[in-house]
Length: 601
Image (tube, rainbow, N blue to C red):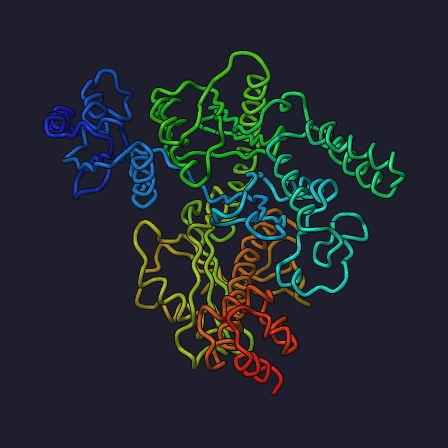
């Protein structure tokens, strides 16, 4: 460890000039390498705590010893400090910060309440302030379960606006009593709005009040001899009752809450998050923060909260298993209440989160042991100098030379690293029908940008000897001494499990049929194929949409948006009648004729 006295002296010089305002501070080491990024309500007071060396854990003592200078960013409040800190950590990945590899975007339910006839849909993505969002849900299965209840109990439409605006008779959902068919006037706008308000109240946890109101309406309909309407109310009450009977008692009085438990085990840290919304468990998800060695539990939990709620909207309350050191800062920054409990239902939920976190660690250890076994076997079979830490798998995708792309996925001992996935649009139009030439271009471009940090141990190609020779030819000017290049080709009759493996200067061979290593090699090869095909399809669809509409004179970005919003897709637009096209706002009769003629000439 460098001389800590020098780092402490530099730290004290910066304490003297540090602002006593909210903001973000950066500690920099040799060559201005960022060591740590932190936020504070009072920067001077926060960094002063690092000067009490004897009170710091060894990890932070080591950090102080490496400080060469510091930088400060003053912001207006705690929330802004949290945002800036997260952006810097995400971009710089400092050596001493705890990192959360959070790639998850959770599904929600959304009701576009500003619409005359709001629809209820599943949703992922950026939020629109004019809509109401409910969630998050930890899985699409949890979303579907609640969506099923809402359709039965509140009869809200789920169709696209383009379908809704052009129907002349009810769809199947109306027939099976899962939609009130506002599209064809089976319900008035006022009555439909009441259903929307009831659904919103239900999703906000006001179940019992709704059921009481429905019971009164059912009785009135029955007294009025309107038995068909009474049956509709009965079915809605049953749907709500089934939800309540399926809920556990711990959730009954919890309106909006995230329950977060953290467990250390076998040198791993797992943080488990339970989402409770409207008295319902919307699922749970585990997280495994990085760079936690030597960090205290409170520090890890605070780092998790900073990162996690940078991408997810906090609920009204966050229940945690460990008291925070900077609780007030986080409550102000996140505009929520953060609590721990020693008894009661919320304490039981914390215990359940801790149990799930411990179980998630056990599963991760078992999975990584399995992957490590396969990587050890891979080292032995392919005579690698060490167990590979970074495997890059390449594949191409095109249709007779059109929309040609190359794809790279990355496999590590921890699994697939999706942040490292890359696609390559083939730049040379003369080679898009030549798989060998395409692979040459892809690998050449990849190696031009290679750094010591992202250098692969193994390159796996989806192809045979031709691909192998093409890649070696493309990379002949690079040092490949520490990189194994392996090609995998289909076996007899293209049977999975009977693939052949090729390396330059070695005899081709196949792996034992249905062996764990054979399955592993197939799995990483198939992941590259899946990624390549998926990217190719997106490019093709985007290109088709762009070329067909942009070829029509007078159709700019606004009109294209209005047309796609009305019809849902270019395909539906191409089949629309002239009268339907004229219905689109902003499309004149002359422009509608031009569009219609384009698709029907």
